[in-house]
Length: 480
Ligand SMILES: [Zn+2]
Image (cartoon, rainbow, N blue to C red; front, side, top):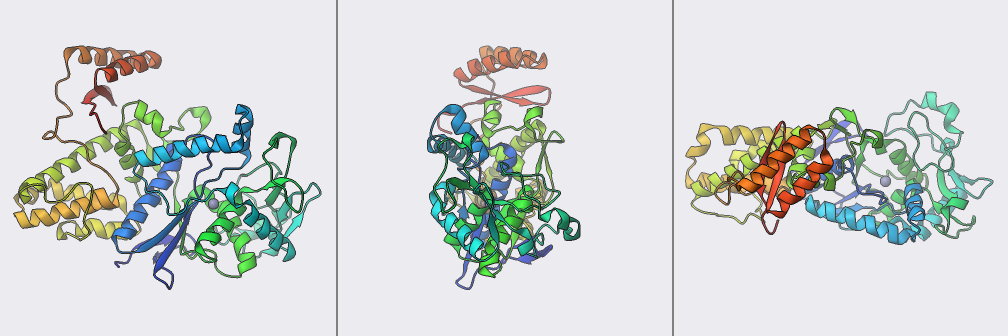
């Protein structure tokens, strides 16, 4: 096993990831709330977690990966009620969409993917134990709250200034909010009594009908599948407070043990320099980007290429740059294959092993998941004159090294290069005319007409790729 180090939010330091005594690294990541298609900000976290997992596995770690599905909360209940369908039917649909998007983005499925609604009894039992131990109390309406004042180390993970928080600690989080804005800590709901608008989305409990709050599911399911102490817990930085603080408080109150030894938080995503929001219309889903002609691998590349601890600014230009970077990598792979004397290794099954050529790239990945430094190192190597003069043996080792990193650790697949079928092969006149017409209407802001023309172009077997101020045409291959 080769050591992988990662910044730990809890200690504020970079630390080597250490498996449990039995050699297994137990990992829990907060999964999606399944009420709509995940947007690219959600996927940035899931993709970076996926790269981390791949780096760990390629480094010889044995990993057990659990990621939950939040299939009951305010938003899922609202969605199901609006569509007048059972909650299960509503969330099943969005789980299918999430899995399909994840498959396209080549995110490995977790080993266990527990659903909150399939663990209601376990959550009720944990809440009951919290009440018995004095960490929780019933409210007048049948809801149960966690008593923050009973857990003095609250706020350690996010380094909350506890002095300033004390006055509000006794205040309760608004009853119907699963999330609340993070400048003050509140007693938070473990169990929410049924309200009129919940319809038939409720479960019976000792305290009357209701449903668990959002935070309790992660503590309970994580411990059920991984034991009382996790080796690594991950999520987006927006989950650090209050969600992860609450997970710690719920678990540690009863176990008296450290809930998670290592915390991994990914910084947030900006779109065109702005926060993602519905009102700005920049909460792109994967499908939105595919509809605009981008490939899932360009999306994957663009979302993982920045450092996970830095906010990443996503733009359509970054997608075009990703397409070009993938082309460069594909050409490097092909060049190595030629120098090595044929396709020595299968594209789909990277072998383990470290080429001296890409030693620095590997070192960057294992040093706090530094993907930008890894990519920088690869591009410097493939651009150097010495790259074209590798001996067959060096090229074979280099090919293995490149594929280990690019296909294995970064989880990318590479596009066809000019040798396998040019992407800039001249399109027929008819297609070119339609694409030019589409470019004109796009510039005029007539996106509905542009979409119609794109469909016409696609029907002819071509995909327009929008680049800054111009377009490229890519031939659609039958099986992606
Ligand atoms: Zn969680």
